[in-house]
Length: 461
Image (cartoon, rainbow, N blue to C red; front, side, top):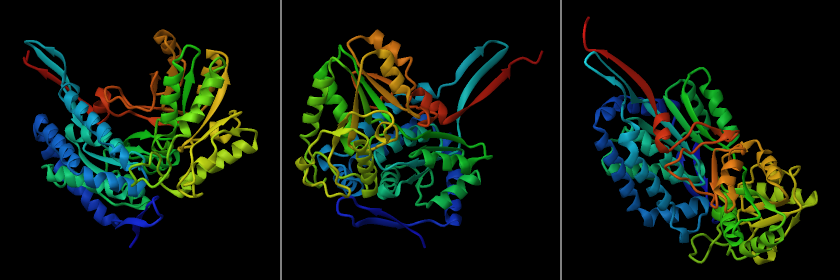
């Protein structure tokens, strides 16, 4: 029997483990989800929305358990209180728009004809959720999928092994039927086999580019709908008219919060030459104030990375950059907890360029490179010089300029004077190797349903 383990970044121990389901047992579970789907979809929309929100409320009641569990599983300090703010914001918003998002589009209602387009649930939705924001990323799909009348099977990353189990427990205790929302512990081979058999009607995956490729290969020929949010290398651009202190505070937080393990975290920054020196100096001071340590300690502001192998990737990128001429500005002696393993000091690098891996490949850790630029055109070219495109953060006092630049940047979301945030009213999407499809907003509901046309002739002649 294959065991799926969560190795805690806190102390390297096995924090949790569960047996992986056999293919046959997993098929049976998905079969139960399919059998339950029609009855779930026949329930009034208002009932489905209320039950989902009761599940959200029940999970909130588990805060005292959820927050330390997250610290043990992936290292986020308990002082930040888990993910409930974003989790609740997204759930509340999709609940508020569900009726309008799923309402029929009436084309004609005359004495002779009624013509309309309705939204129908896909059926069984598979959610493969990541470890970095395991509750918020999951709820992006789980809440609207259930509200729209789909049944949902969730498979969580091994690093946050207990999250899917806890979410399902909360929702079932709140009244969602057992087979409507299920958590399955699956290894990669079993997941691939189920996908290859076409057992799901829609798959949403958040994770690595290679993971997205594996899902597309497994689903090839099944015509299963797929939504993918994959890698990122999100840029920030600080223009000459930016609020310098606000830019430093927000961009450094965006680069290092959650130990840099954010889907839309800032990984590269371009600063106009007139502000460059001051921006760099203030950024180094800002980052140097972190307290790296045990995430269960309420004084800790920066916890370990989720796994020592993730930290190794960051260290390797920093070392490669320095070997090729970059300069690391943060004194590692300020962070005695850096143990060469999962506990990693933050870093700011200058004298970097796009020949270096740290400015080209996903870092997903608390390290960021800063480049001096002279013009908007130079910044646009550098921001677009990436295989990824999730968000871009533009810092200026001029919304028209931000809009003009934003239209030239190859990205899914353009921010002005903020970053590292997911607005549930806007579709969350990416371009290039960041993925395809979109979640949340009205368009998120549309991606989790299919259109069905009704052409009803009221007269026979």
